[in-house]
Image: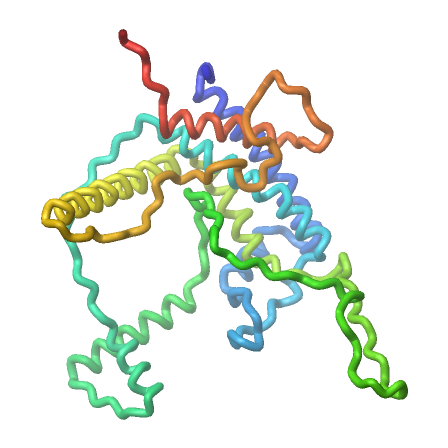
Length: 315
């Protein structure tokens, strides 16, 4: 497959994604009622989303919430836009060579704070030396600084993998749930829970950070390409070390170490958020295909071409 001038195509798709991002930012600002730059400061220090009953985290501020219909509309376009930007970064990184420093294995140093917390859970008293107590205080202050530091988010360079052993929850509609409390006819009838409303507030703190991360990535594709090239060089070196360790163990008749690493930054099959399985410029356009789907399909083909360029026949 010939892509012509890749730099021109990448630049054209980058401008198209920036226009789509500008539309998403406008939708978010319409829901927040204020500029996104003011929302980012609150989203960076907002508590991470989680179930309040189990994690003890506070509920999000109403100023960081969007109506459900607007939240889902933004997410429906944000996911394919992120996937397309990720693939443009991979295509831009083609030909970049990164020289890594010599590998030096590091031994993990256990944290004193984890040991103290484990002893306290067992109800045991802990006596620390002056040096260990200084390390404990330094670790505690460092953890407090990390917690108080505003959250930033970079565009992920890797597609999220589908976990094959994931057990999906089976949801039963409310009208099919048994509501029998007693066989007595005089027992009060349990009312059905109200259906979810399109105007329910949804925590949009992470969504706001994702919009900001996508904008920063599109503004500086060469820097993101260098970032991907460094990751690929480190990952290839780690895969080579694992392969050498397995070969050495097999020569001695021993089982080699098993480590799970990514072989490719892309997920096999349809790109995340996309509606087109592959790029085909001659295929008839369907009604439900959006502009971002066409960009994603072409960028996906370019990324695979950059990762695995076809071998030329020199015979």
